[in-house]
Image (cartoon, rainbow, N blue to C red; front, side, top):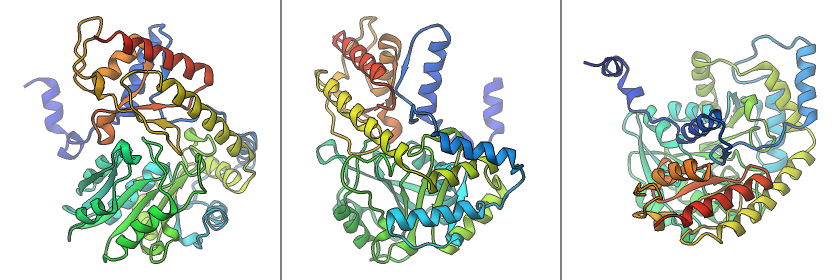
Length: 405
């Protein structure tokens, strides 16, 4: 038996069954090309290209100077939990207490906490698809069964209420979605969320995990949380954080607002896995969540401008089909028209990954295949980059696409 086979045999079935994050994987390939001296425009990572606002950095520096460098309560420091409670009241018209808040090392951990505390082996988790890459894998990690309901590009990737009704069974424990959505940029309207809520409240023992991390990157009507509808707050794990809206990806601060029983369970779980997140980052998050919003609003304006720029450039590429995202910073075009075509080097494009690798090596642009988001035939393109790099990247993509025969 080979060394690799021996290693795999020694590892748990749980980790062997877990897929690597495709976004991280493609970013890794882009870095490998860059290390060879090739200039790559990385449009595969979901990360704002803006610097963290100065007042937030200053708060972190003050925390260091004040010696705020010790362990903190597992679920978050009191002033951060209070700032989150105030934010939820101010922005979302939701009444919570600090005991309902759990601060974690990023929104991803908040989602993992909620799933591990809610899902038993064999429980079904309905996921609106396309979905963020980690959703289905985290469900599997919790020994649950992902049940996908898929929206089409024609209806802005929104699965219908009829699809939701049909997917609910006696084993359904959680319904899960993001709005604004990664990877599609789709935003559920108040009317659409109300319809989802109206269906959920008909069923006992079904929770919702609502990923709202892109709340402040929104180009349409005001953000609405599903927790604000009657009967939903007591069965919703509302997940958010500071990474996207405040350009704080590396600070690793996410949070969940949930019924006290679920919040207590997540506190208990987190206490055995990671304990509290970084004390300095928590102080920075207090300044972000409770501070001025002008930097966030300026970033949103820039993202809107970039969206419109990229939309115009995408429309110039023959065979490519896309919607117009109303939030987040991604396009999610259908690229199946290129399947079956051949690259100048003689390689056949059979699937989205083939196209992504071709674009990486020929156009020197990094993207992510849609298979990772539950929908083969698509690719995700981030527009969290400078206007100059976006223009360069889309022109290179077009040139490479036109070479296919």
